[in-house]
Image 1 (spheres, rainbow, N blue to C red):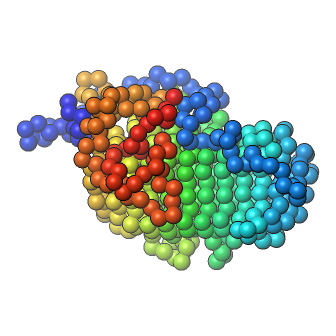
Image 2: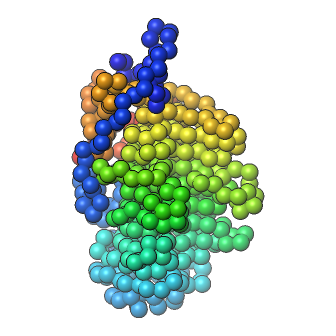
Image 3: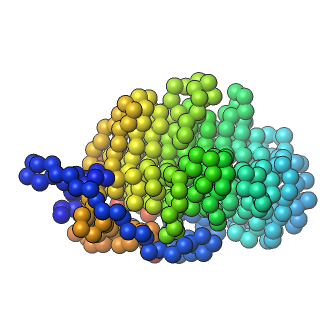
Length: 453
């Protein structure tokens, strides 16, 4: 079969202008072992995503006004009393917090005088939370880096958020951290008519050690109402919800937000060989949706002008990328493997979809509209129950998307549309290559040197 055969989930094959339908055989169970609690260190496999604790910006010289912390009581006090321009620095060890939330100072940091909460040695300071939420940020210009946040709640519904960004907390930066066992580890939302805009969530690792038996939403990164948020270079995995509606998302932006960007993330909905009930969606603009009166400015859309690009999304039993009332959306240069593809839904949704490599379909539902160009949809190999995508990449089921040969690489990228740069963005691909207007490639990277190990 050609590298560029196109199919839907019922294996539509075109032969000499005739359309033939075959019901594809059931996909065999993946042979990968159960990886809960034993996932390998990400820097050995995907060095361009997740926290880099060896080179994290948190590893800086101690300033003269640093607040050096060695126990939880000192941490609670420092968060309440820290001043603009100061850094709260946690020494190595575990800080156990049992409370409703960690309140932070009412003083207002600025761009020139931010407040930082970081580890003395990145990755070696752990905040264990038995609380509804951890840090409650309602002031701008906070910087959180180099920390491990672990939810330690007997009742899973209690561990909601590790960091709650609300109201006036614009320009929040959350980078090079690890978040374990929180229903929505980072939650962003309005406080009355104050909105936390221009935030950044990058180079973090989000995962669950066990499935969540909760009614609460399960979405590791949940951005509501905030404009111009960047979600970049994170690893998001194993977000399985067994309670309530049993629907979970890796990350979404919604609530009437504008100009958000989700790029260069690795999303693995279920890294195990076990099959679970429910529905797992990789990345979304709109997520489950909000009532119009609760959206910013009572917008008739969940997002406007948002971009989803250069991501790898894999092993999701529902859509890899979902657009729910997302106006002027762009979905480009993603790789979706073992998902149901891209789903554009409701009349408010119109999306430009280009240069993606995917198994599954590009669906337009409930009057959703899409302009689709240069997407490569993997065909199912009828006799073997495999996808063509498995012959293009070295081992996609294990997260290795190295292209098998130079010849295949040329064929995959042939006919791609020019890459669309974003102003005031890094404009690098999943593997860290700098991009220009002259670049034309399909999938999340134009070259893969040192990208997968």
